[in-house]
Length: 243
Image (cartoon, rainbow, N blue to C red; front, top):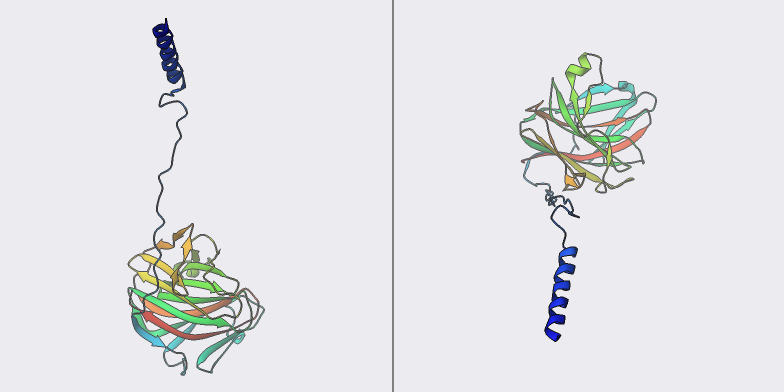
């Protein structure tokens, strides 16, 4: 009698376990593959050229007026830096291009600051030529842009700037207000990378890398632009680094 009871109890346990076991098609969860976040780069220090902007810039630099009037721009060289003031009214965009420094692969690094708090953009430029250039901008409110200036579009009376990341974005790497910032644009092969204060910029939790093959070589430069408001900024130096 005892053996039969144990046998029945064991049979009930097998039935219960079978009833609780799901087939692979029942209750399965679809999982995404975990992708590791790439490691960001830090800015190289292999300098190939550096200008402290403490001597007469008219010798080595030329200016291009993208928008605005020349009378809206005031610039002086004082206390070992280049000071640029923009007058309000029209939108303004002035860039300064080196007459002799042309590169294919290069990182262009600039140090600048706002002497008065402003939403105006400071810019660093690589591969500038008659066809256009690449341009990385930051402003004192913590935003950045990565753009391409296309001279063909300009000649067609269209907006010459192509936004390479789709919008202006905010980065915690930017020191806001009147703090000094270093910001750089790397142009190597068909890849563009941006750096703020030595660290690579992130977008969507990944280091920002933009692919574009429009320009393969050209001059280096820097600039300042404003949407109709005044600006008072300074540039401490610009340098070309080996990528």
